[in-house]
Image (cartoon, rainbow, N blue to C red; front, side):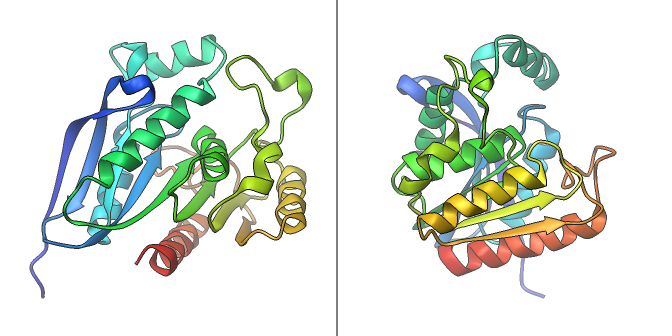
Length: 247
């Protein structure tokens, strides 16, 4: 057996408007070079489950960073931070994009990075992945895990989230993988189909997978939504996608 080791730690990085925020970095202990992945956490926050995902990527030979997008809420727990974000009307898109851009820049300063960076996000993070993949340069591959709100009705738009991500599809600059549950309502299978139409219309490189007997958050091992079959195949697709475009 080859020697295996990894390192995981909290780091400081510059996010939106050069704010210094926390991020969780996990990487294999070796010279590399390794591909990088930015993990956009779900609405429940920058929590234990998110950090576990970062360590899973490190185990598979990636340098993973998960910026704490709720850092500025300044509450004691991820749950409290999430509650105050929800109460304020959700995450401001410009701030999220600034933090994701900062996380990508941080990865590209590391001497053991191979130069390539992918992004993955879950739930609201899936929506933010779609937005980032269409508006930020320098992303080599993207994975949207059941991102709700890519398609939005006019009444769902706000000052914090002024444009539905679907509107930017024409600008999508990297291959996109989408993983969805047929029992999900946000995004519903109808929304996923509409998104697919838009991607086809603009000739974008993408693959979508729709899992039966799975709803929202089927990757979440710590929640009743977890669906083993869908999650296991989903991870297989994620690693296949990133191996193809980041290695």
